[in-house]
Amino acid sequence: MNRKIVRVLAGVLCLGLLATTFAMPAEAKTKKSAKTAKTAVAPKGFEYIYHLPVSALSNHGTIIGCDIGNLQPLKYSIGGGLVGVKSFNFGNQYSATATYTEGSALPYSRVSTVDATIRPILDNAARSMGYTPGGMFDLEIGAFTNYAGYAIAPRLNNAQHYELSVWPIAGFSPRVMVLLPDGTFRMLNDSELDRSRESLMFVDGTRLYTLHTYFPKAIYMLVYVPQ
Image (cartoon, rainbow, N blue to C red):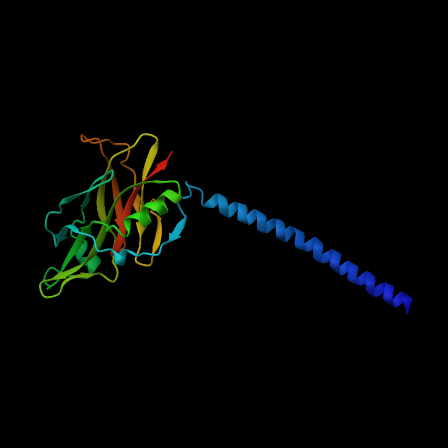
């Protein structure tokens, strides 16, 4: 009887020891993962994503200008280090927005300011990631008709392209963040923001970047990242 009790106690102690042995590496792994996650959201971690309490659809800023159809696109002044925005779609607005030259609807891209209720939220989000906020603008792409006005495209069938003229700041690298209709706020990747011409400086001192977007509605924000 006593031998049986001893064996049971020994078994319990053995199980407890095994449980402790396997639990310790798991705890260490958790701490390591937390440390890795903390490193991943450092200021230079461009993949970091915020989910903000606002969306691009909530913006009601002032319209700066609108390109309709295949008219010569204009350059719109933004400010805050972002000197200008200009589209160059070479006719693919029609295929992107499912409109036709013979139809009643024309493609449009409209640039607007960002209203005072949204700007501080984007500024604070950028600063929390270690970036210096710059200029921002609302870009809307869709179809225009005389009877219905402007209607945001439900989706874009191909990318739309825009030139961004940016003032450089010594010791900083210009990047662009985007706020989407679902409240996602993130850094544009290299396929969305082409920086291949940033080494060239124009007569007015600006550098040129190319925005490639599939978003029918979004707010874009220039930020300066410490080099």
